[in-house]
Amino acid sequence: MSSFKGHCHCGNTEWEAKLEKEQQGHILCHCDTCKTLSGGTFTLNQIIPKDALNVTKGGDNLGKYTYYGESGGFPVFFSFQGIIGKGVHCYFCKNCTSHVYHHQEVMGPDKIVLRTGLLDEGIKNFKPAAEIFGKAKLPWEKEVAETFETLPPS
Image (tube, rainbow, N blue to C red; front, side):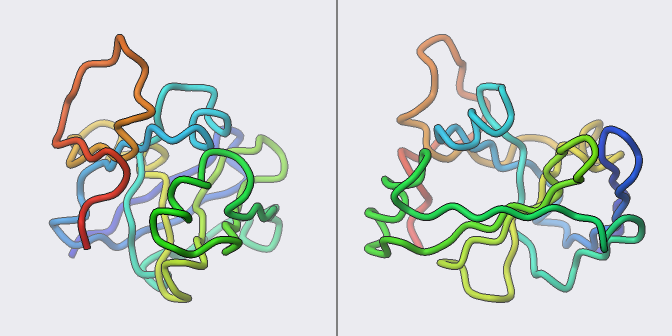
């Protein structure tokens, strides 16, 4: 297990994430919600235990908003899993709005989705490990890792 430091754009929020070797890669998410939240064609993520993340600066000032399975790009995900209406809680720096992590209720209370693109070493050294919601990829995007139409089989 290795520790990786991250920070938001303005520097008001900093954190450290402890990642196992197999977590030291990006899961590229092409869902419509990630596109809307990031303004890009995908986001860089990893699913980790909640207790593997330690917000070391600005944790008391994180913003939070919640959306449900019926909004954004996740209806397919929640319908696919058979769980409609589960919340997705997004935690972000209130000053610059960089998203630190998300908690999807469907994953249970102990797992979060960490934005690996905001880790200092992650953005430089992590490689794509998988692509999810490949069916929402833009036609000009090339495949860079194993791609799943929605999510990998459980």
